[in-house]
Length: 333
Ligand code: UDP
Ligand code: MG
Picture 1 (cartoon, rainbow, N blue to C red):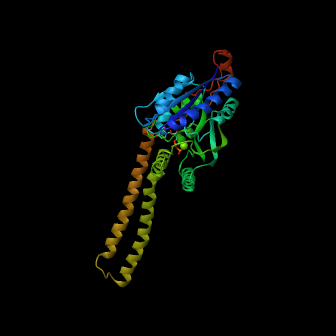
Picture 2: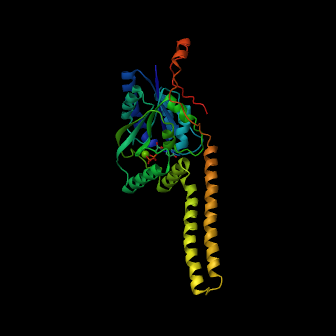
């Protein structure tokens, strides 16, 4: 029997959890009845300061399908998610927020696509109730910038709400970098991905833990984890400055030749300052290029992940039965 595991990171969600689990449990009943899948909910307490963990334990005692995981302190959503995903052992893994902004009722639709053969099924928000214009605007701007700068563009209006197949999860687990921009990592692994559009509700209770300062840092994290474009900036600013300096130098120099050097030493001084400034920025940019490469190298990401490796027909005959046509998640570094 295949197994579904729903990973739910929660930080100070005591008020929402019971309602959340009631809705999730109803979905579980439906799935267990229709698809004969074993269902499990894994609640991750990210060092909450309210009664979240007590509520989780209550749920675990009342429902045999509930597992709980408590982190030592508040590590932030990305790491809480990672901890949950590391602990999850299932054929299909769903990630969902505990605040009921993402409807658990969508999980059966995710499962349908998973059974069709998709490895990642993610929810795309068509509306975002209860969110301010400014938040919608900044979020839209962020996705545009990411698209321009990064080679792994994150799909727009997509949160962490998604389903992953076991091999997609195994792939994700191999990305052990410390600065974890999950949306980017989810996309980085590739495989067959499918989007399901849904309407995002307002929070059930409590308030968002992501204020603008946190969102700004989150955006910086996304851009710097998936692009080294900012490091290249110095090169271009330097080139620009050096170019402008050159043009300006011609002018200052020409003027000095025609009208004489009225302020003694000014033209040469200006020239040297501007030129050196440009050259220095360019040199910084070059260092930036190497630094960027080193940065990428230190992440130790696997070089690629294999979608499917089909043995030659010949080999298949000799190994008939022994070698199932198994997609290898274990790509070679
Ligand atoms: N969360 C977490 N650790 C944190 C902050 C948030 O586990 O440090 C959880 C939170 O409990 C919720 C999910 O991450 O289940 C999304 O958080 P939130 O609703 O505050 O984010 P938003 O929906 O506003 O982006
Ligand atoms: Mg939320």
